[in-house]
Amino acid sequence: MCFVKRLVLVILCVVILCGFETKPVEKNREYYEKRGEIVWEVPVDEKKVAFTFDDGPSQETTEPILDILKINNAKATFFVIGKRADQYPDLIKREIAEGHELANHTYNHLYIKTNIKTETIQDEIVRTEQSLEHLTGTKPLLFRPPGGYYNEKMIQVAKKLGYTTIMWSWHQDTNDWRSPGVGRIVNKVLNNVRNGDIILFHDYTPGSTQTVQALEIIIPELTKRGYQIVTVSELIKNKKEQSIPIHH
Image 1: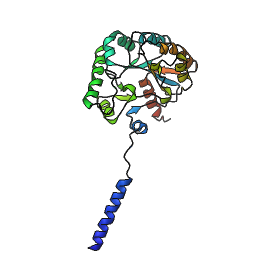
Image 2: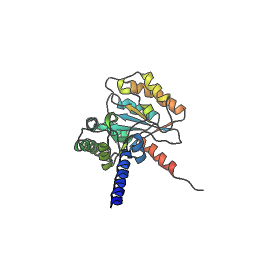
Image 3: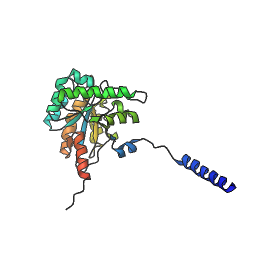
Image 4: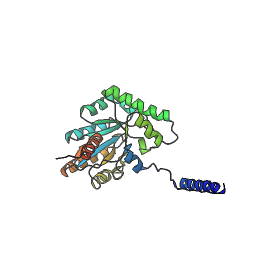
């Protein structure tokens, strides 16, 4: 009987010690990238990068940005604010007509911090989805949370609604919304560019045309270096194709 008691105590000690050694899973970039739930960049062999524009559309800057992209045969992904899509439907229709990709950036540019209710997150995404679907006939598939704020609750809501969450390459945040100067925007992109980058710009920067001016320098230079400017979905498609082994 004494032996049985000692054995039970030993087992309990082992269980307790093992419990203490088990660390909680850290839900960081590596965790979400491995699960394919958030994309920061897309490693590809080809010289391709994705241009992304947040917070638009805007009469002041979206139109000239579209003009530059058209002249240079470049395609981009526009992360659209729902209420601005409702204000400028013609710009949304032009983006689609010219072969760009439209993505969801919430309806009111809501920072989705941990205290935001699940219902609010869902409403913000769905309202924008409905606006874009009404204007284009197509449901967006990509979502980017304003300010880059994300948490498990937000990821699961986006996933449930059929979205992949897209961030941006950490070395390719142009901070153009701060109006840092055309030269700084240009240098940020050109000095750090590598295959598969997702580059962050904004097409709604009140009172500033620095992004437009920077693009007039960046795009021709990237083209000269052999880069192709594509949508985020095009980058993801390239990665999937590369991951399929070809047997001869």
